[in-house]
Image 1 (cartoon, helix red, strand yellow):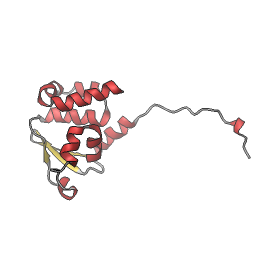
Image 2 (cartoon, one colour; image 1 turned 120 degrees about the vertical axis):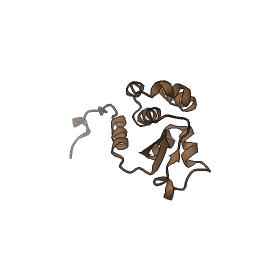
Image 3 (cartoon, one colour; image 1 turned 135 degrees about the vertical axis):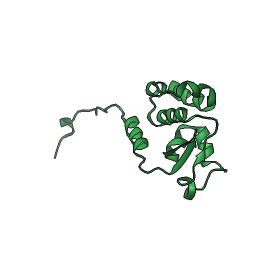
Image 4 (cartoon, helix red, strand yellow; image 1 turned 180 degrees about the vertical axis):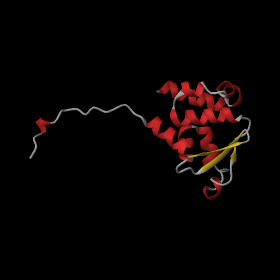
Length: 129
């Protein structure tokens, strides 16, 4: 039998790398269950991740007017009034929580005017962290 005194009284928890895992999930497309269309391009994503990170997308994807899950992956949900690079940057931020790499994209500047509600919501999450 091992005595409790032989083990340290604390456990060192490594820093979270969830953002990397979620970023890889987005990049790989594994387990996607929704297709979004923005600026003429389509994007595969995970409705649970999008809904957890944005109340705007939650309403769009899980609200009363949302597509049935059986057709959501095959039939794109159109996101209007946003250019493809902007939407791509926003998706990257939603999954990774990294603003610096998102701001480095071509579309971030346009995000401030084209999707102020989503940008405001995402920026408020940064303040909480």
